Image 1 (cartoon, rainbow, N blue to C red):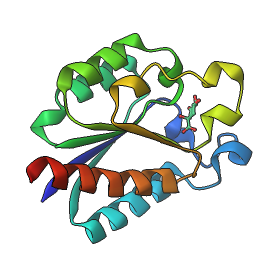
Image 2: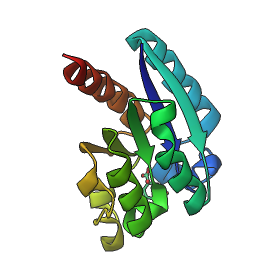
Image 3: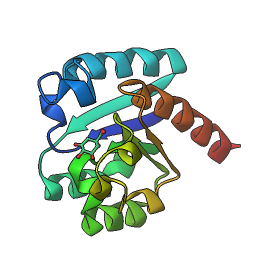
Image 4: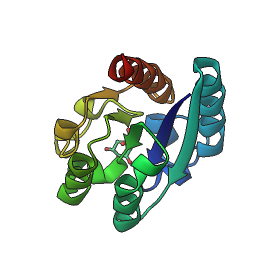
Length: 148
Ligand code: DQA
């Protein structure tokens, strides 16, 4: 069974309360439940983590190969600032999919640049919680391709 780790970055623990017009009204717990259900349907084993701390996110990425073959990450605010997170993704060499609930390109200028996307296989942005589900499909496809 393909193992996937879903990593949620800072402030995503506040989903549901946080800017619902931008991020929707579903809580992180509800989104995680949806991720688990779809992962099961796709035959993926999923681990889900959230952290508000850059160093903790970096350590999770560094150790991801102990529990996963593919990383799905929403780096949240660190998307636009963290060279260290980018370096961790590049170092660990696991195929990584970047996810955003909102379409970062239709928002403020400072969100248009992703420091991390360049070291990811691809980016899914703008489909709300479904961005994570689309990423699960991509993860399954990547894992199948890598094992054939
Ligand atoms: C986000 C977009 C980022 O710009 C923002 O800082 C977030 C969430 C998204 O999922 O749309 O925290 O990553």
